[in-house]
Image (cartoon, rainbow, N blue to C red):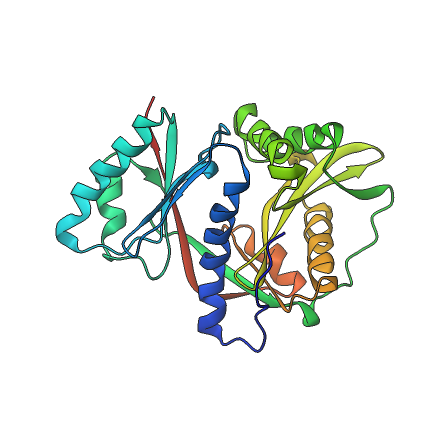
Length: 275
């Protein structure tokens, strides 16, 4: 995964920044995929990669004046249409400018949560490792086609999305330059049945946790905590001091039990359908 100076002795504001900087580092890392485009400026950035999931197509790090918002939305839509993207995400964070950008996006047909999702961070040396033992539960690194397909099937069920959304991560992982994906994917098995997923990405000096999902019938049994704990332990072993994520309000209690706390950051995700 990516190499960079590891963040240590961070303030709350620095940890808040790290939530969205880790996400943006993930987008940059997609340059390991064939044909990926990443265009950055001090006003806004775009990325486009082939997999059929809007995570691989987006606008982020937006700093615009109020007067230019509508024009830039038009330009972004055309940029993705030119590349025949079926959809894309527009991401916001606590530093996004102008403050009313979200209202513009929603009026233009984007769909998303007006409030955004809370950013969370934790000191990996204060990780709560006293999770209950789960008989019959094992966690594997999803890297070969069979484990990747297991990861896909759980992921799309947990997040109630088309199978193409999970297949996109399979395709991306298998097509990464040199056979080395910038992220690490985990799949949890209960008696050989895949039931949970997570993903680890190291960037911006911290470890980011993504794609935490559990089959609906397996929730509230400890599998979500276990599949989150494993990448956190791996990150600490790799020398990282902090882990970050952004979560729904319903997911926050699970992460708080592991030692996460909210930091000054909100992540907004707004999708535009182009087909």
